[in-house]
Length: 382
Image: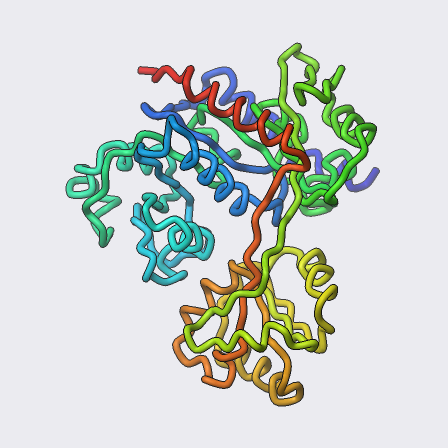
């Protein structure tokens, strides 16, 4: 009861904010090209970046978008730079943030940009000639990009100033929204009702298999009635049809981070793990199937590694000289910023690439059909 009383001002502030946007009191803009927003309503990792990468793969495989100009726009969490920046694959995390840099390195042919003001960032991506005239782009190092035909917005669901054309909202399987509370007593950074603004709701980080009854229970927890397992849709309280899908994490085999990496370490029985992510439990469970984790270092999300961290890891390496050292793809981006990695660490330092996949081919087909149909029906608002 006390927590509800203390949270009341925050709850009412969020309600008032959304009401102002919904009723036109606060100005809302749109983009002249289709925008796909990938977001959540919680603080912490629901898997936005791997889902963004999955969407990019879907678009690049499609006949409609394989040869079009696709862009990704992120705010660039914890970057030191300001304004609009084009992400270069040989850049640094402090310039762009780790997640945009990871996307650029995995999809070098796609334009990736960062800008806290998404509506202005979208305008520059659609009109790259403004790179030379816009004040907020004056420190942008890049200047030659094609006009975007489609923009994927990473973590923009709370950015109400820009109304995305298509919203995909993620919910962590391990943290159901109906069991959660608003910050600081829980992890919710937005109202649970905001899920009904989504075109597709994805329950992420699921086990590899869910019973049909479990999927129906999830639909009911979101207030979706008559959930149809064939169409993967249910009806919300306002009568709108919403698509509900389920994804799981696929961990891939260890990959060396540096050219000096010796692949024989990947077969070591002992493993030293370090990471700076919201929750490393699934990763530890995966690695424990093949390795004995002899040492684990857990850092804050988006942690920037320094010489003291490297010293700790090297001490563990000396204690376990045959062990492989593993980290996440996201941490890999930040490790590459540190230029004094000892050779003894480079040869045994590996990353664990991840992908997300739907629980069935049927759900994958529903996702692709729903997304592509929406994109074909796009009409710009002027």
